[in-house]
Length: 125
Image 1 (tube, rainbow, N blue to C red):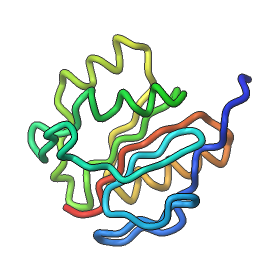
Image 2 (cartoon, helix red, strand yellow):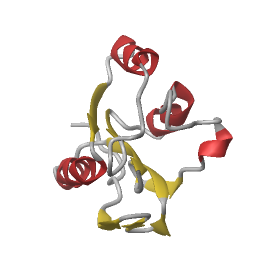
Image 3 (tube, rainbow, N blue to C red):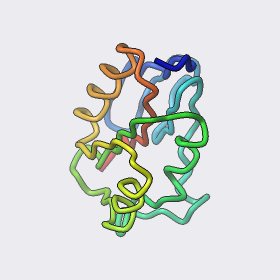
Image 4 (cartoon, rainbow, N blue to C red):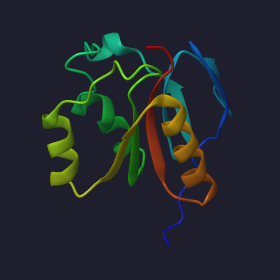
């Protein structure tokens, strides 16, 4: 197994707020092995529909993530278009698309197992 930095743990998740070790709190967050930051949708003009874009995910992979966890929001409003999933498959990336609470649980499990996991988390709708 290749050595990589530990992916930060999600300490708390509630509507509109996530608390991440090393980041503090935020509404939407990007996590990757060794780091995290707020996920500002304006950077890539992301909206609920069509949803998560390749540009949103690229930063996670650039930081060494080999498994990607994508959240859909608490009410499954955030979409992930087929083009984004096709791109992940073309790049042989393992990925999971789940409701935010389920996504956070899986992400923390993978991080705890030492997997180089990255994630995009939307903590509201």
